[in-house]
Amino acid sequence: MEGLRTERLMLRRWLESDRAVFHRLNSDPEVMRFFPQRMSRAEADATMDRWNADLEADGMSFLAAVRRDDRRVVGVIGLAPVTEPVYDFAPSVQIGWRLLPEAQGQGYATEGARACLAFGMLALPEIISQCVVENVASSAVMERLGLRFRRTFDHPRIVARTHPHLLRHSLYGLRREEWLERA
Image 1 (cartoon, rainbow, N blue to C red):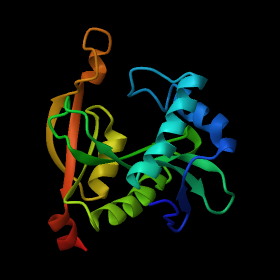
Image 2 (image 1 turned 30 degrees about the vertical axis):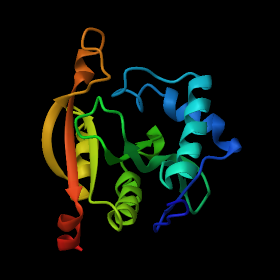
Image 3 (image 1 turned 135 degrees about the vertical axis):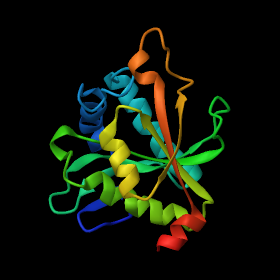
Image 4 (image 1 turned 180 degrees about the vertical axis):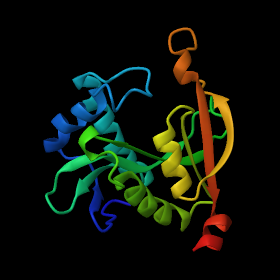
């Protein structure tokens, strides 16, 4: 999965030199508005290390989305296994993205996720994605990718008492046979 290229992006593992931008991405209030908390530098560093380790172990992960023209990291796009039994859709593989504010609204999420979807659909029976119900931008990307709305659910990792606005999520999915019909 590492090294996937699109017209404008390259997806690659996270580098030591990416630590500052990775922290900025994961601590930005706008980027993280649909997450229960922003990450500290230590949390961002640990997440970046875990995602690189996941790439080694699973052959997929959330990767650095790098613009090809200027080699700047614009966000994260990738695939990751969902294995925790708290999710009733586990085991599965999810597709996801997160972009810096200055990179949003330019089609990078759809472009990079489309490449990840094509990669994953070669071997996986289904790819899912999830987002907070109010996250209309991510839902729109899912629909542009051809993922179909499956249902809403209460996210098992969100505490309703402290984050009631983040509890309800939409689940989307695309089965390989659906993807092949479109391709």
